[in-house]
Length: 86
Image (tube, rainbow, N blue to C red):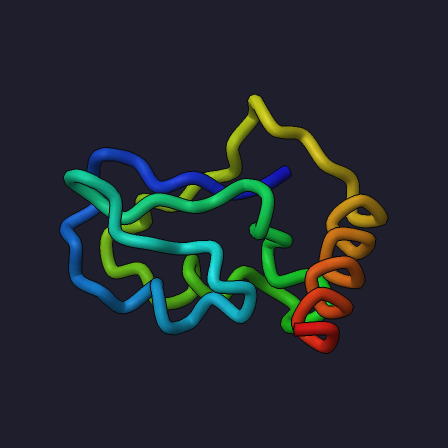
């Protein structure tokens, strides 16, 4: 499943540069995560890097977007191929 950022976000700006897929962006009020790009860092790191650096622990899993490890890895492969092709 992809991750989401809750309204507890304090806009500290530390999560965005940590995302290897560029899935985190500044929304209207708080940072948001593009579920089409979020792989929970599968393929890059053992743990989601945004969660590692978040000082307020406001990045839970999005239970409405359940994805297996295999699905997340396939997304990582697709996103990596798109970067190479660009």
